[in-house]
Image (cartoon, rainbow, N blue to C red; front, side, top):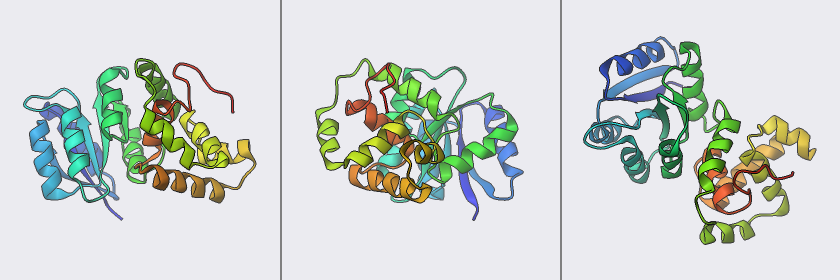
Length: 224
């Protein structure tokens, strides 16, 4: 099944480079490009892509607001992958909170870009979930625990909380299976249940929720 991708960046050379790399893949099709946040919203509506590569700093409308609007309006399962030129910062964290499924640096090795797109398209973990956990932990320290998110923890079973904690700490399904002595299929079932109960989109959003609900203490790795 072909993954339909939109590339959004205000620099034409950057857009063209990403589109060229992805266009060489048999299972990925770049259906459109955009140079501003407003253009990104329009091409998303028109082409209904599976994945959007989204720059943050752009004229007219930045990638943060564009991401939030696209996620809010979309009636199809679109994933947004944030592009950044430097180490993860507060902008990237805000993008994750807005609904982005992950982030990559613009100098990502070409062979890793299609892997990132496929991973996000399938709703899987990020290329570096532990980095994402550290990022969210760093900026979540500045936030008070969200009372609504905290109350939602009561909806979860003890086992689901254990799985959520492991996901928030960057563990893969295989690692969770070994840590909790349960089968991989059972782990997948628990993750699906967590997403359904909490109304979340993917594992990245589970990590954000774990910090904002207070299940994971910001800046500190909780014991399993």
